Amino acid sequence: MNNKPMLNCYPDSLGGTLSDIAELLQSQDLKDCFSSLYLLPSLYHYDMDRGFSVVDYDLNESLARPEDLEKIKSLGIELKLDFVLNHASAQSKQFQDVVQKGEASEYKDFFINWNEFWEGCGERTEEGYIKPDPNYIENMFFRKPGLPLLMVDSVPFWNTFYQEVLDENGKKKYLGQMDLNIKSDKVWEFYKETLEKLASYGAKIIRLDAFAYASKEQGKKNFFNEPETWDLLEKVQKVAEGCRTFEKGEQEKMELLPEIHASYEEGIYEQIAEKGYMTYDFFLPGLIIDALEHHDGSTLKQWADELIHKKIKTVNMLGCHDGIPLLDLKGLVPEERIDALIEKIVGRGGLIKNLENVQKDKNIYYQVNATYFSALGEDEKKLLAARALQVFFPGKPQVWYLDLFAGKNDYVAVAASGTAGHKEINRTNLSKEQIAEGLTTPIVKKQLELLRFRNENPAFSFDSEINVSCNGEEMTFVWSHGEHQAKLEINLRTYDFRMIS
Image (tube, rainbow, N blue to C red):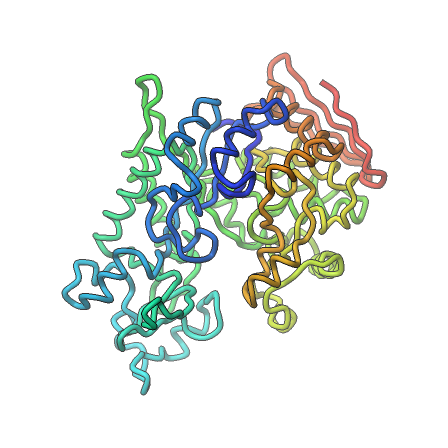
């Protein structure tokens, strides 16, 4: 994998379809700015969560056609796609088969029967499910209040998220994410089929969504269980190695990118790197805001030096389809500074789901939902400085489409999405007219200049020598590769910077 810029969007984010995105990437405005494209999973068939509750991995041809993928490939742009390891939609063929056939279904062990999992570990309630004894679940991490189960025809299944609706005939219907039983041979057949399908789409990078939740054991924490999670990754890697794409007669392996949020002090990012995987830099978004607000790059330099010294390969970002991660900074930034960052971004209109729970329990996983531009106080000079820092930071820069167009918090979308719509604040689709208008603005043009510089300059490579210096508000980044060099000088108080090649 190269370390050049990657555009990140939904297939309908920029113009309405993937065909529109391909046309935009080919245009003079974006030509030579990006070498990779990360398409979020509304590319597939899904029922909720804008793609992450996958019904099946066939193309959603109302948004993306095979010829669109071929067009992107012809532009020399690598494709990154999602594979959701932990769960599948309640509307998937596998779960629907279980609902219809029960014990006679060939997929009866594809999902986790809650009572079978907890047999002997608690008492059965009047509702028909086993309530595990406290010693089994007191250290378990659940991503929603209460026990993560869904009763379907008196059978409880382990469930991540769901919503109950009525179909056109007034019959109860479930939408949502049913957790998979990774001890089932059928699940591993499904994993293999899925990876082969993603390879057929031309995917070179596979983001493993929610992989750290997939391993479940009684009494363990239900998040990055060890050694089970490492065993899972190793097994998925072997399956992926058998699903290589072919270019010019040569096999090219798919790169796996495990996605995980964990605090810096836990060191999981380093463990993933030591196993030979690239890892997400979920620390950089908060660190850049912290550096710009405090006019001090010392912690930013500390993190850059660690990545350089330990040779950790990352994909980094400013904004993304989720919120701005801040709990990840624990152990790298003092907690009072993290609290101040949260307060600052919320004060600028950011949202936090279940804020009252965050205030009660500082260990709860949380993000602030906001566009990166709004998180910076909608200051164009700050946004451009943040992009310059990202472009020169170690790693592969991933660029959220809405950041590129200096998108502001979308409260209309939040209101229209109901109580669970906080993430829609940063997911506004842009029309062709909005894109055309945005491309005339200095903030978009200057970001594209930065990205084109990063994409085309041979000084930037995973094999480059990188030196970072910091004197309070002044920072310098120097990349050297062979006879090529690229340099950034930036002031974190005035937000002025200059690039030298």
